[in-house]
Each structure stands twice: as C-alpha cells, then as structure tokens.
Length: 368
Image (cartoon, rainbow, N blue to C red):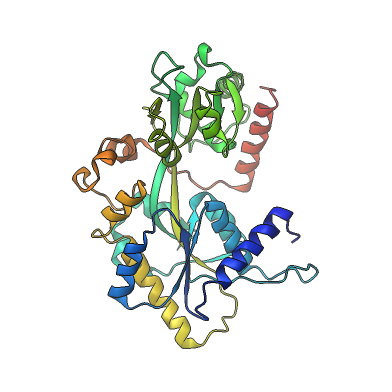
C-alpha cells in the first residue's frame, strides 16, 4: 500500500516518539493523552509492579495510524520500511473498530482475559463489542452527538433535531462530514432510529435531507468549533466532548443533547494482531498479564470516578452523580436519561454502507 505524504509524516513522527521511549521489549500500551493522568498510571505501576511502556497520542486519528503501521508489513518497494512496535493493548475510536477488524489488524479478546469487568458491563456495551461471535474490544468511555448554538445569535432556544430546519437558521449551520451522523439525525427528526434499515429511495427521507442541505453553511468534522467561535455559524452539530470543552471558555454557547435521542461515540481497548511473535515466551506472558491488569484497572469502580472527573468524559462504569465534580453533575451527558435515549450504531454491511455513501453524495451535491 502506497502511503500519502501525510501518513508518511505521521509515521516518521510516531516512530521518533516510540524510539525515544526506550524499554526494549517491554509491553506497550497506546492511548490518548486526555483521560490517562500520570498520577493514576503511577498508582497502577505501584499496585501491580507492572513493567511497560505507555505511548500517549494527541488525537484518535493517530491511534488508527499507529495501529496500521505497527501491524502491517512495510511496503518492500517503498523507502519507508520502519515498522513500529506492536502494542499489547491500544485505545481506538469505535468508528474505526470494524475497519481494523476486517483489515486483520486486531485479535479478538478471549473472555478469560476480560474477567468480571466484562460481565459487569451493560448488555448494550457487550453487544456493541461483539462481532462474528467474538469480542473485539473492551468499551471504556463514551459521549454523544450534540448541538451547540450561540445564544447571542439564536433567539429561540434549540431543543431537538427538528429545530435545525428552522427558516432563520438557513445557511448558519455546520454539520459533521459524516453520512451516518447526518442521515441518522434526519431519521431521528422523523421519529425513527439511527439503526433503521436505510431505503435510499424513501421519498420523505430524501425531502428532509434536501431541505436540511439548504440550512448548511459547511460540512466539517474538524473545523466546526473555530467557525462557531467566530460566529460564522450560529449552530454546530458535533461531539459532546468537544462542545462542552469549548463552552467552558465561551459562555455564550449553549450545548443541547436533542430530546429525541442521539448517537453514541465510544472509545474501546483493542488487542493489536501479532504475526508470529518473535519475543521470548516470558515477554508474551508478561504482555498477557499486563492486558488483564490494565483492563481491570481502567474499569475498576474505585478508579472510574477519578478518570471521569479528570477527563470530563462519561465511563461505561455507571457512576452516581454524587461521585462527579459539580461541573459535571449539571451536564446533560451525565444524566441517565441521555444514556437511555441514545443509540449505539449497529455495524453496516458493505451494501448498506454503499447506500449511505450514495445518498450522502446526492445530498452534498444538492440533488435531493
């Protein structure tokens, strides 16, 4: 596979970061900086006496890039031949789970490695991590798709998805550059589910998407916050983690989780695939022990409140509001009603994914 210039630069940077960590054959955990406080990592080391390297990334896209470049053999015809160390365990955004699984970048997690933490999970989380009768990851934390709007521009409060169709918001909205998010919110506006089978010829749905397109200033999953802060847009559909973090510095923003319910995004711990491991058996045993201990640690009810209060991101471990910092107790994403109304996307077949992309292309081109 030929790498793009951006992927090459990311690979070089990741390689430099990892080689600078030292540690030889020590097991490696790859995660995000946000949500893995050093104090808790140090406590984990003291309690378990585990020896490992921890590599922290800034963005979820880097997690997927690292996973790909660590498990894929380098292109023999290319000049970039460095292969990154394969992690024992890696965090991954769940939207990349199926891609990584189908590509062969992951190994399933044997139930005996998951222990009681797995069986304590809500059945919805257990179902979300199952594919083909196997468990492909341990869910860890989550959030929802939400709406943020500027109170200094929008007169009437926004409460639900249907408000995005209001005439005064024409040309003032940014939507994610994501077909399932946008088509899904239109389905929710119509009283349906994100997981309803998609009929690309559904007349009502096509009309709703066509009228929604006329409301849109831009489709972007990366730049919607600066556009909102500058008031070029008045309303943005985005992810709760981003929106609440921005609201803390821009009090003129109001964050709303639609009353009809929303889509759930989630982070999952996965086990990268190892092809013919060359490490000594003792190292492999050490890696397996680390995997078990780490999953037990991040889902331990004793530590979950500390992870949540430091990151501001809900955990799959149920918490009482009294365990949360006051700033989080008031947030809608920590209310039980949000979890009850929200939906975890079911996996799509290749044909279903193609239908979404075709309908999305028609919407973006103004053909609906």
